[in-house]
Image (cartoon, rainbow, N blue to C red; front, side, top):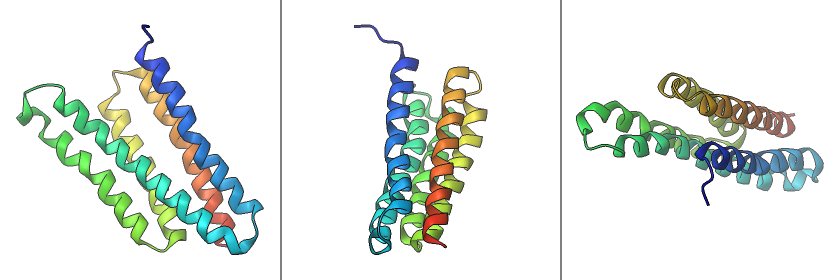
Amino acid sequence: MNIPASVIAICLGLTALVPFAVLSACLWLVDPQYQAAFAAVLLAYGASILGFLGGIHWGAGLSSDDAPVHFWQYVYGVCPALLAWAAVLAPTPKGLLLVAAGLVAALIVDRRVWAHTAWFVRLRTRLTAVAVVCLYAAYAAIAK
């Protein structure tokens, strides 16, 4: 079976939006006593996605043996995970905003680094837009 990488990434990327959408919607629909639990789960999920986005840069750096050329890819690659960790340690409402900001920052970096891969940049832009809207909606639900 020979499936193009872009098709696999698009399918998995869209699937990865499901927890953002479902958990964000739950924060508006569940009894307020359960909101903190749903918000914590959303924060943890968003943080894991943010860390994953840094891992992409490590993977790309490992694709060749020319480590000095990839020094900044490795350095940047840990930044999203560190930001995600800080977001999880922050109070949940602020943590959601921190993850949203981290997703946008990662998109800015990825648009520059992967500019030669147009399908990936389009995918990342759309996925980030939906995830950030969900995180802001979740923030609005618990910060009211």
